[in-house]
Image (cartoon, rainbow, N blue to C red; front, side, top):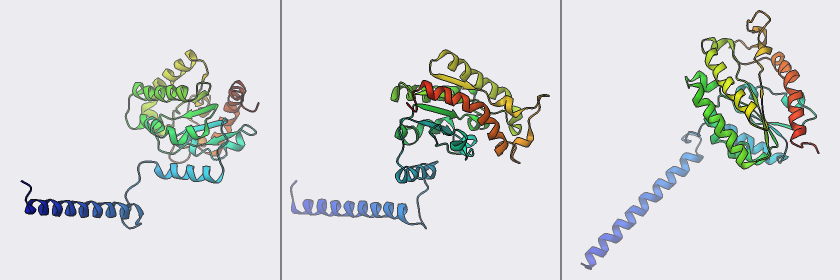
Length: 245
C-alpha cells in the first residue's frame, strides 16, 4: 500500500493539480485586469465604483440627507443646490429596481449614516411586469433594513410617476403608490409625497412639456416643480431628524 510507485504517482497528481489551479488563478487575474478580456462587471458596479471614488476624494459627511433610487433622481443633477442649504447627497443610479436598492444598501446608504433618506424607486420594476405587491414588499424590506441599521432615520417616499410612455400601467402605478402611502400614514417617521399632480394639467392630461422625448424622463422644468413641493417637506423632516443642530 505504501509503495514508492504509489507515492510517486500521488506527488505527480498533486503537482499537476497545483499547476492547473495556478493557471486558473492566472487566467482569472488576467481576465480582471486585461482590458481586452475583462470580466463583465456586476450590474451597476460602475456606478458604485464612481460613488466610492467620489467618497474617497470628498469624505462622506455622515448624518445628512441622502437621495436614493433610479433615474428619476439620478437625472436630478442640481438637487443639491435645489435643496440648499440642506445637506443633500444624491446616490441614485439609473435603471435600478427595488431589488438593486437592497443589494447595494451597504455601498450606497451605510457609508453616509443618513438621518433622512428620500427614496424614489419602483418604476422600472413596473415596466418589467412586476406586480405592485411584490415591489411594495421589497420597499418594505428596504424600510425595515433602514430602521434596523439607523433606528432614528426618517424616510420620505416620492411617488412613482404616471409617465406618458407607461400609460397602460397607470393602474399598477397607482396601486403601488397607494400601498406605500398607507404604510407611511401608519408608520412614524415615514412620509409619502405625491408628485403626480405636478405632471398633469387641469384637464388631467400629462404635461408633455415637462418630459424628454422618451416621455419618461424629466426636463429641468419638472425638477423645478419637484423642488417647489418637495423642499418644504424635506426641510420639515430634516428638522424633525435633528439635521443641522
